[in-house]
Image (cartoon, rainbow, N blue to C red; front, top):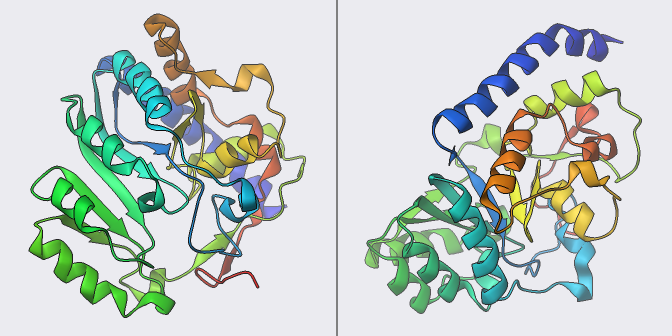
Length: 280
């Protein structure tokens, strides 16, 4: 009962926050603060509580081709004035066969600020990648998992040698945990509960643009891709070569209080779990 009372108290802040967020996007001529693009579902880890659901791809894991990336990226770039941070995610992002081509292409755009490459650090970044992104606006973001602890000092030294900007997660012991968002099933959340939960959801800040569609978070993006959630058409907002239609969908995306897919996530009762625990 307490969680519902808390949601009711928070609702006015949620409504105001969403309205301000959408207005800010329009007022800045569609300058996006942050957005992710998933370029691979292949990974070298099998995390039990993966918020991105990557282990579920199994043998069907694959890379987005460079041509597909170029098409979707161009549609997004044409619809916005600027993207402050574009994060390339996976899976394990450096496993993408097309990563160098993708990064090189994004670097050519003057409408992107920081370009992030997210990695778990299980394998050292390749020399070709380090040479390409040294002294550029690309920042490599590394998780710091206990099972790969011997790699991180080596990675730091390599990146310093090639003048690559880095950021390392989980430096503080107090932040060394993940959340378990439960099974993918209909939890029958109320609209108020979904609105309030999605407003400050840990995953909700990682808005993802995948295969031309906008998603509230990577969990919902991959759940849709895996066929685990049948989204209604009204919830699947697209970015296409039609700039006006794409901008209309961006306004809807940044103003809506929740996504239909939030029904299938147990974020209101999420539990802290051991970070990067592996499936057997």
